[in-house]
Image (tube, rainbow, N blue to C red; front, side):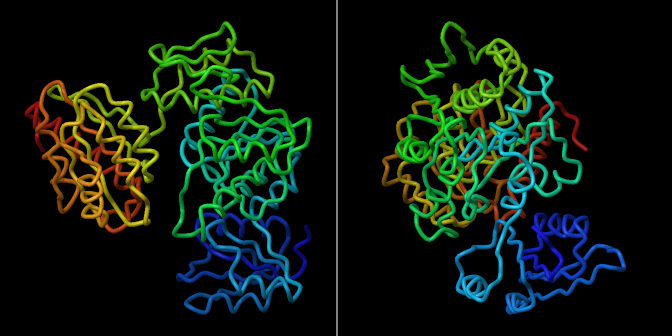
Length: 450
């Protein structure tokens, strides 16, 4: 793609700023940055002219552009963007540019409703263990166009790809991994069908020599996998899968990996481990190397992260659980009696299935609700006949204090099932606050209070 005419950058968050760096490297000299929010530009070469169009009418900048690079969070089906394309403009994205720039055979793409970050990091861990050069990018880690700054033709590019990034993609990677797909981002996508159709682009354009790894237990995932022309390898909890999750053990032929032999916690992680196993087998890594690597893999921060045991209470930080599906997986992994912190900002998620699962947990002892969803979640829990003490708190600190009353032999799990906005800037800040509360609790128990 040539950038010798005026190029637009639509959205100037982390990805948009990466796009600007890429365009400058590619020799673009006339750029229009469009964002609803105020824009602060970095220092640029004198040869580069950048115009900023911000505020409510930021899309007015489209009229000056021949090519526009859409940031993933910008919905591509707006009337303004349709008009731009009807009048001869070209709309593209980081994902589309990246797939044009590198060989599809060097890409492992991972998508799904939950587990993407853990799975791509497991794939990287296995490949590193096997001595294979690789890098992570996309929705996790480094923006894709930043990867092109030092592209290595021999490395494997492991990409976490969201529905936002996949929605306009018309090329599929050599290895496509489709984790459990349910519904998500319905505050952005118009329908569940649109969300799942975007996910399907990961494997829709695969050829016969490509590989589609998929979770066979979820019907939406199976439907997506059926759109691939590649070789299909399934993982799941039933015999017949290529990698079978047998209780707390992974099985592939005569090879097995027990979760008890691994550093990572949470039975739900076996699904991610199975997906990573099949993806790296497709890259030529042998099963013994894969299982040995997974034994040393450590959980990502804020993904069911064990923060220690203090005064007989275990603490788990699952702040990354911004969806009911993620929380369902987390609560089913708890072994001890536990107290649960739920709630956050409103994304209009349906909590019925989650509370149906929670209602069946014998080891759940109490729920503390926080955030904008607290009232609605409490009602949903009552409708599902959740029969434990439930209380709404004004913030995380008060909820945390109440949960620590579970006492010796118990556990506290924060797995909110919601985004964090309103109370916190993002899930990372929420997780940091939880960790700080854990350390303050530790200090109180040991008498080392500042």
